[in-house]
Length: 210
Image (cartoon, rainbow, N blue to C red; front, side, top):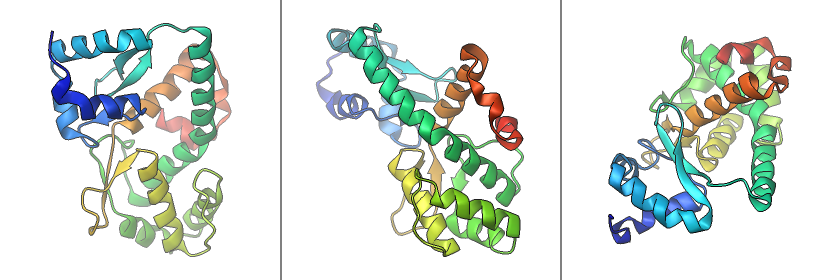
């Protein structure tokens, strides 16, 4: 059994509900490629009713429940409610990024985004400006500004706070997409395909992401 003493910081991040990927925690992600370490972590987590889990591509790791007890179901329902409330603004943001930056593919871990480029592409496009203004005012992003630059800054700030983006250098205005985006899209696909929840009622632009 692998000693977990050197992996305390990694365990703390996982137990705090953080997502570990190559962008958010390169060293922790590298460590989790070790099968024996994952087994040891799962042994440690078992009394806590937790286990390591990943998305299908194993691009991001996080903790899931070992067994869905009544307490686990209650907490899981609360977590899903929070995710559901943020789902529409996040999908709309991803669609805006594709349109504003002329991207064909949906965002994925490792993609680089620059707020200044986003502002430049949006400021002379009335349709994008209107959609961005509505999005920034959404409760999830909660921008109080009418200035495009400030709105974009607030959107990126919130996405960083929520773990969807990381800023490698505080003095350089570019961000990298984390594996939490991959997790989010996998969750949406699961809800749509397995749970028959009304994902199809969302705008067609968002449906195209899936």
